[in-house]
Length: 338
Image (cartoon, rainbow, N blue to C red):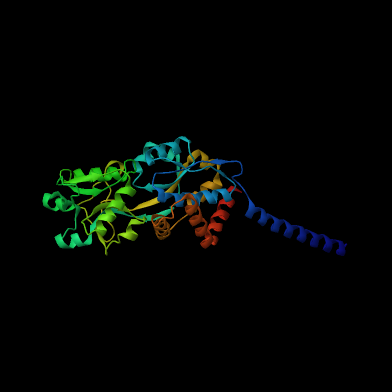
C-alpha cells in the first residue's frame, strides 16, 4: 500500500507539473482575439502612423484580425468610435479633444483608460534672433502692428502664423486666442497642409527670415528648430480656452504659460467592443510610449523614411529594442482574457 501510494503521489506530481508547464505555454500562445475584426483609425497626421502600427502589431499577436488603417480627422473619428463604426484611435489628445469626446458620447460610448504618451506640449514660437532683437516674449505683443509686420510674408501688414489644420482641435484654440488676445486685426492664421506650411517656415528660417509658427511635442519640428537654441516659446498674457476647457489654467508648474494645456495622448476604443474584448481593453490601458521615442521616429520620417514599409520597419525595430516591455503588455492582456 505504501509503495502504491508513493507511486500515485509521484504520478500526480508529474501530471500536475506537466499541466503547469503546458498551461504556461498555452498562456504565452493564447489568442483571445482570434476571429475578431479590428478597424484602426488615425488622423491625417502621417507621424501618428507609428503609434498606431505598434498597437496593431500587439493586437495581431493577440490573434485579432486587424484591418488597414482608415484615415479620418479627429471629430469624425471620435463619432465613428462612439458609434462602433471603427474600433480604436491611438491618438486621442486629452484634454484638447474634450469637445470631440463629449460630442461622440463620452464615457457612455467610448473606452478611455491609461496614458499612451504623456506630457505633450503645444504653443507658439518665433526665431530666437528676432525674439532677442525686439525683446518679444509674449504673443500679445503682436497686437502692435509694427511688431506684427516683422512676421509679414506677403505684404498685407499682418503677421503670418503657420497654424493648425482644420479639424485637428488646435485650430479652434488658435482662433479663440486671436480674439481673446486682441490679435484678429494683426495676425493671419495660415491653414492648409501643416507639413507644407512648416516646411516653408523652416526654409524661411534657414534664409534668415523671421518666423512665427504653432507646433506641438512630441513631433520632429522641435528637433530641427530647437527651442532655446534656434527658436523660443511665446508666453500668453492669461489662460483662455474655448468649449469644455474654458475654465482651465494653462500655466505650467514653472509659471510659463504657452496658452495650451499639457496633454496626454490616449488610446480610445468603442466601449461596447472593449467590454467584449478584455484582452484588447487591457492592452489599450497599459501600452505607453515616451515622447522621445515618438519624436525620434518622426524625425526619421522627416528625413525621408516615410513609406509604409519604412514605418513598419521602425515599429519592428522598436519592438525588438523593447521586447521585454512589449511581451509584458501581451502577457497582461492575455491574463485579462482568462
